[in-house]
Length: 180
Image 1 (cartoon, helix red, strand yellow):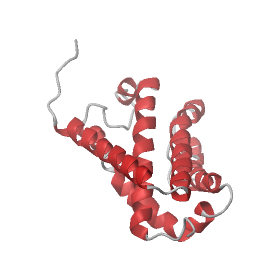
Image 2 (spheres, rainbow, N blue to C red):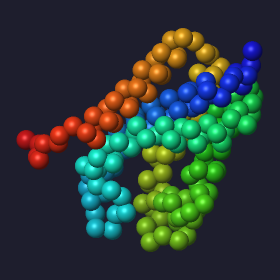
Image 3 (tube, rainbow, N blue to C red):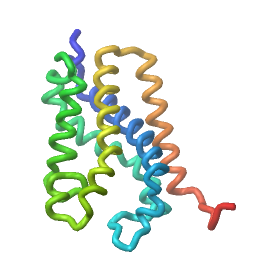
Image 4 (tube, rainbow, N blue to C red):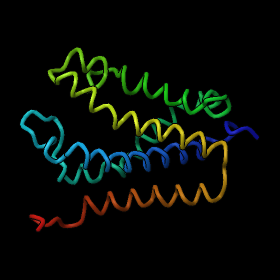
């Protein structure tokens, strides 16, 4: 059976789990490397402060994006699941349609560089997070589909569940006023 000959439910589960796990890992790296608490609290920032429960809940809410990705990619799954260099084709879709050529002026996109006041060098430097996350997700999705096993299913299912649990805990548990 070819990797693309799977039902939508399994495809959705794999896309979503890969997205959530890579989103969390790369997000934690970016949080530390880019100093998001300081960056998000700047006067000109459009971002919600990092201590907001909405930010903590963000990784769990990536299930919604997983569904959107799965719905958009499912009709084209043969191109990246069955063909040679499929991970590169999937990553190319992300780079072209979701990162560099967004419909609106997102930072780092062509539209963002043209229409926002954000300095272009800063926008380019900030791209590493989403470029790395989509690369990792693309490789993981294609690898899992081409090498399906119970171990993959259990491991990725547990990791995705851990992302949800940590996210919900971060949004609902009491927060100390300050750290020592």
